[in-house]
Image 1 (cartoon, rainbow, N blue to C red):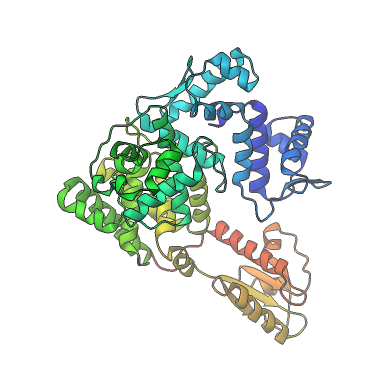
Image 2: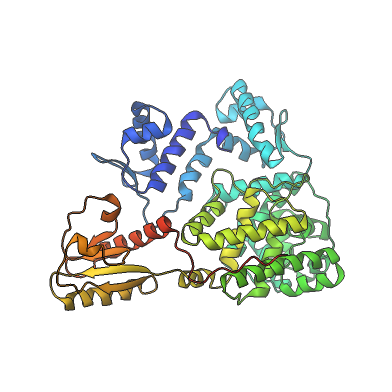
Length: 511
């Protein structure tokens, strides 16, 4: 939804992203070329951004401009800045709490003219079409053919707009809402950890707010009726929750709050998934295809799946849970930045073979099941594979060819051995080290050695840029800066050469 930002906001976002992903000093001239704007305008932008991010974060010097987020801050802060300050998103958020106000009334609250707000609504509706929702005017509210689409949109918005420690729902008592969720989970013996509880709160708070506005979804499943407790049996706790939240904890209310899980046939355990395969042929067929996909990937890369049952359940859930609209398409599960796509692409730099295989197998799955996933849906599923498959990433690292380091010391051969020992201490899983023992040293003799990165204790007069990046000088012992430089050089070589896994990949196993 970047198009709903005004020109100034989009330019600032583009600048911050370029600085963040570049990770180094960038000249004002380079930024001006990148954003197709003048250096004068960018200087004004920098002054405004530094008021928010501080001079320590948005640094300037004779070298240019650099974005340096402190260790305790996250990239998501960049996007929250625009979501919190943009007129468009302020307007969108207002609608979830009050659907009775006119364009004129909301324009007054936002300190803009009615004509400005009407133009903004027109622009918003162009972008909101991807989420299958629109803004209706007089009174202003979100509308859709499918109530679930509105809920999914707000889930995407609030998850990106607010940090983990913020409670954005000003009309919901956080303490008692959390007690309500913990109560339901405890009654059904569902374990909760921090990340799961964070998502659960968001995915139930949005339906709660929509219910309070009088919007309901039709329930498509009765599989979880037995999980809804008779709340009258748990007084006075449930009575206090009902009083503080101004609700009635009956079956209809609880179903609506948890409708996202119920209407997506969400499986809370592998055992429940297995039970459904005995009575539902469609579930049985899909589980079979998911199982084949996992077995194919495991066999092709030669890495077992120690938590196979858990991964099968998670894969089944996410393939049904990647918010599907009435038309069979998948709206974007993000607003300004697709973090799942970025995560997968980061993994692709390190493990291109695995990511290619994962997408290839997913494509076969789609063909076999007559699905047509969007790009965002595919990235959601591949992300699930990467994070839910126990020990996958370390095993993929183990299957990569190690980077070869050639160590040359002009002190003593024993000094070279000491450097060798220390480098194996810090980088033992990624490197093979070779000591230079030839009595004659020259650039010509270096070419007779097979290596990826050269480690020296003295400066070498390299002119070729690619060779310079592969040479690191360690004067005495490896410092933190030396180790960082070597790690960056290793990453550079992985990206440059697309290091394959040691194991020759098997031919694809057909579905």
